[in-house]
Structures are given as structure tokens and as C-alpha cells.
Amino acid sequence: MDDRTRRKLTTKTQERFFASLGVAMAAWLVWIASAPITGDVFDNWYTHYPAHFAAFAALAITWCFGFPRASVIVLAVPLVAFGFVHEAYEIAGHVHGFELYDALTDAAGAIAGIVCARAILSRRSSRLLT
Image 1 (spheres, rainbow, N blue to C red):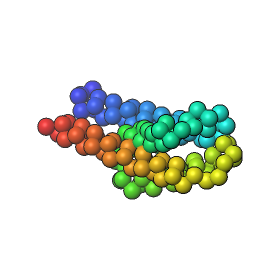
Image 2 (cartoon, one colour):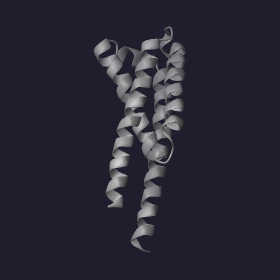
Image 3 (cartoon, rainbow, N blue to C red):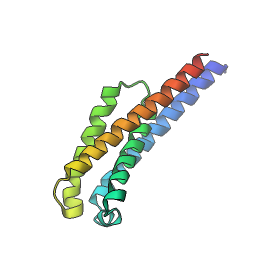
Image 4 (cartoon, one colour):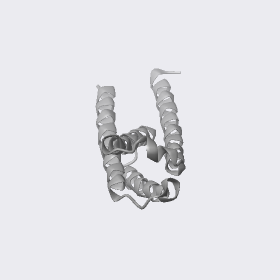
């Protein structure tokens, strides 16, 4: 097996790992939205909004690494939509109304995560070409 074939197999394995991790993270976020206790853990603004932002940034980075050849729009639309659906699902789980600022924070985290992941991927691919 030559080096190019080995690198291709390693890249595929990494993509599958990150895609699987992305599915697990999305399931975890659904569980968090349905668990009433999580609303009490981050009950103040200076932990609540950073938790939303960080969770969706991490989710976006994971999905970008799992699907590195997908366009930004193909990644951004479902991630932002998932943020809004996540907030709608919290209505039942946390027993409160729809929180638009949370959904917008989720969307901002997803976009920031995509930008960070794309920067890392572009740097990595340019290094592989040289």
C-alpha cells in the first residue's frame, strides 16, 4: 500500500469518525433540550449564552470535519435550522416559551464554528499540497 492510498484511507476514517461524533452530539443536544434539570444549571446570562454558543460551535466544527467537501450553505442551513428546532423542543423540556435570543445564539455559534473549521481545513489542505 503506497503512501497516497494510506492517506486516503486515514482521511476517510477521520471523516466517518467526525460524522458519527456529529450525530452523537446532535442526539446529546436533543436530550439536553428535553431534560428539565439543564435549564437550572445555566440559569444566568453569563453562563447560559456562552453554553449555547459553544455547544453549537462545537457541533458545527464536528460536522465540518465529518463532511469537509460539503459547501458552507449545505452545512449552515441545517445547523441553523437545528438551533431553532432545538429551542422549540426546549418549550416542552424546560417548560418555557420560545427563546429567540437562544436560537440566534445557537445560529451564531454554528456560523462561527463553520468559519473556524473551514479555516483549519483550508490551512490543512494547503499544507498537504506543498
